[in-house]
Image (cartoon, rainbow, N blue to C red; front, side, top):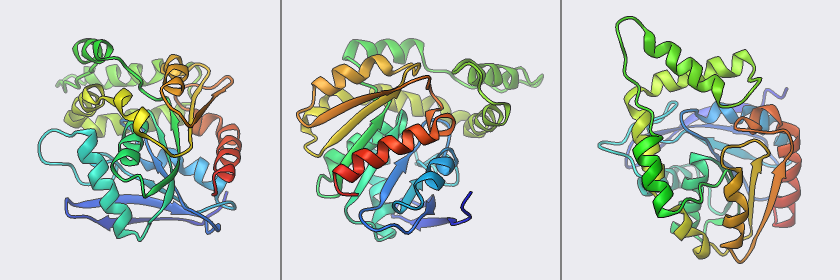
Length: 267
């Protein structure tokens, strides 16, 4: 593995955004946005895989990893604003953008908020939910971490992480469980932010070339095709035998797909 991976902080008007950066390739940088409750660490294998092709920058969403937490409840719009500030601080102008799950919501918002900045967009597990689905998920699918003196919440988090995808390697599941525990009271509001966000309304407003994708066993796979139909300049791909942790477990397949797509759109 390449050791050319650096960490740092970008100063924004909201607070510090933690990031990882790797690679020195020519062309536009590729910015990576993570799922909840992970952080930019989930992209290290992908960054190593792409290091010889382009510069990659993975940002920690406010409230996760090493980034500051927003005052009050988060929204996708506020996350977008803060991460655009971070890119400004890092001197990143035009870029290509990739987001996975929560990161897909934020990436789509950035593409709408700053179309001049996003030349091409890839969304993994796009949450193309109807208003009815979003309301149902808000009512039934938001998991609230409730610490208890006997530590029962630790086992509940552990079981929740390992139920997301069969065969998750122990080290990967442990990492995600610890990041979820670290998120604590910020975990549920992050999901509420995503389920409150009208992602579907953004897609017709995105003009840049867009790749919509998901792992074959991803819980959001069913939304890829309808999301693609909602856009005028999109294509879709399904990665075989992949699920929630496609970035870590099918890294080479995903890297090949991104190299192909972003090369065609000017990486």
